[in-house]
Image 1 (tube, rainbow, N blue to C red):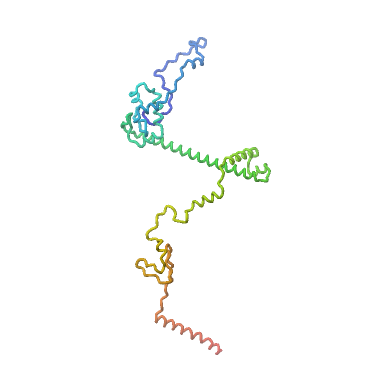
Image 2: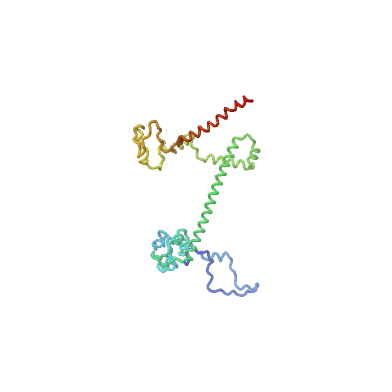
Length: 317
């Protein structure tokens, strides 16, 4: 084989030499008597199906055909015939090699390897760029087909689940409605002749559905999902050395030594809480200087006489 991809289906080989067609004879004098079609079919021997040679080839050449797929040597079919002449027919070898070199695993191995291998597992030539590109294109085509099948399968499951929910809701409403069957069909948009069939399917699906767990069991499951005892959640490491330890909690606040170079807190002051930002303190107001106090007194002295002059002016009037 010259290519590692599966060979396309080809018509049977033409005969080596064309047989001359005799000239047409007159209808009144036929030259050869034609046998009935049934006799011709019965006289032709039936072709026996070719047996699968996969197991025998793997047993004879395990270095090439067993384990992880390996790119086979070109014209390996002729090498097999030389090693075991007459053991396998041409049809058997062609069917095996077409199936072997057309598998997805073989195509992946073809794109990941640089050399081919002979019947003994030894390197036997490099892989041409033409065969490499053909294998890549075939893998891309198969990947696209697989994605399309998966998407179609997901869409089919989604549609079936939606139809199942619709039938269940239809049965639920039908068992609790006070309308007549005709009015119910009009309300739900269902044909009257299809209603009973849909209800029967919904009843069967409801009977086959697994029983729902009781409410108490669902509440217990949600409770188990929480972290036990209010402790540290899973995945977090141990406490850091600079975090508060159990020994510091037992020690009174007033007797704790100051940490670092900070001065001790005054008595009655609230200790800073870990993990909280300190409360901003109001800025202290600056004390005015003597010059500022004198200016302020002068301004007040100018304002007061103006207030005293108002009653004198009224008495003059």
